[in-house]
Image 1 (tube, rainbow, N blue to C red):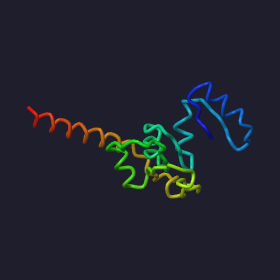
Image 2: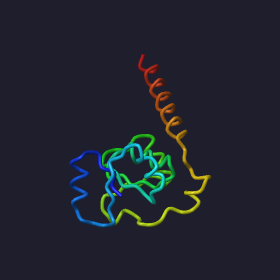
Image 3: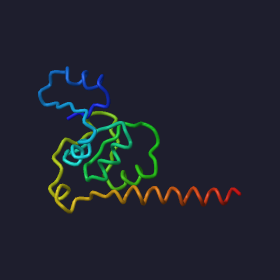
Image 4: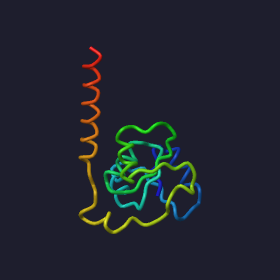
Length: 128
């Protein structure tokens, strides 16, 4: 499934003629789709973090340095870097991750944001 971000993307991917590809642009359903997915591949750090918080393994195509939250998600195995198609493991999400006790953890973002704010505050006070 491809969640298109624009009409141009929607037309491009829908015109590919692949029956196994579903193209949607409905942002309201994006979170539900990501939560139900076996994995997510995206260049968007925000989408990857959302997938990880919803318990969906995520692969980032971004080549730049990882931010603090991304580093933590990588260490936990919830976010992986993908430079080639071979880096992506095609497998079903385990039942443990899709059950009611799945690690749907928006608190992860709150914790990371607060940690960054604390570090910034400490650095700012040291520079004064």
